[in-house]
Image 1 (cartoon, helix red, strand yellow):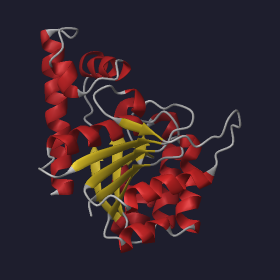
Image 2: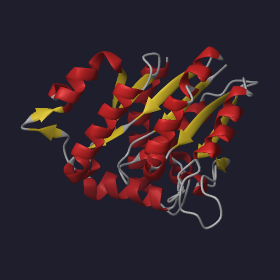
Image 3: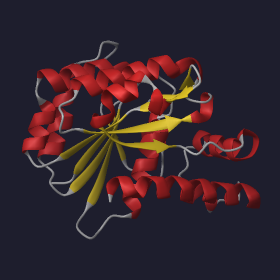
Image 4: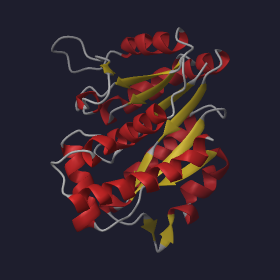
Length: 246
C-alpha cells in the first residue's frame, strides 16, 4: 500500500494547508501509471484545502447539523478509505480545531497501528513558526512526538513567514524540543526564507487565489518577474522535499 500523510498542528494559521498543497503538488508530479492521489480536508472551520480548484479534494464533514462539536466517529470514514484503497497516496489536511480530536482518535482506536499493519507508511507533518506562535507550534510538535507510535515518520516544516525560529539566540536544532525528539524526526524541511516584499508577496497572492505553483507560473495575472520568483520558490521547495521521500 502507499503512504498516508497528515498535516497536523494545534495552532491555527501557521501554514498547514500550504504544506498540504505543496505535498499534493509534489506527489501529483511524480505519479506513476496505476497510482493515484487522494486529498482530504478535515478542517471543520477553515476548509481552505478543498478550495483549490487544481485538486479534487474530499471534504470530510466532522460536524453534524448545526452542532459545532466534532463527532470523532466521522474519522471512521477516513480510516476506511485508507484501509480499502491500496493504490493511492493520501494527503490529509487537518485543522487546528480537529487536532486534539484526531490525535485522541488515533491513539484510542490504535488507528496508526491499523494502517501500519495494513502496509501503509504513516507520515506526520507538523509546521513550526517563529513569532508569537512559536511556543504553541513547538508544544504541538512535542505533543505529536510523544504520542505517536515510533514507526510514524515525523517531518517538521519550518515556516519563517512570521519571524526567525529561535529562542534565546538558539536555532530550532539547539532547542530542547528538538534535542528531546531528534531520533523521532525523519527530516526537517525549511520553507525558503526570501524577501517579503517580492517573493513573499508573490506567494501570498498565489495562496489567496488558491492556485498551485504551476497555475500561477502559467497565469498572465502574474507579471514576468513574479512568475520567475514563484518558479525559483517552487524549485527550492521541491529540491528540499525530494530527498525526504527518495
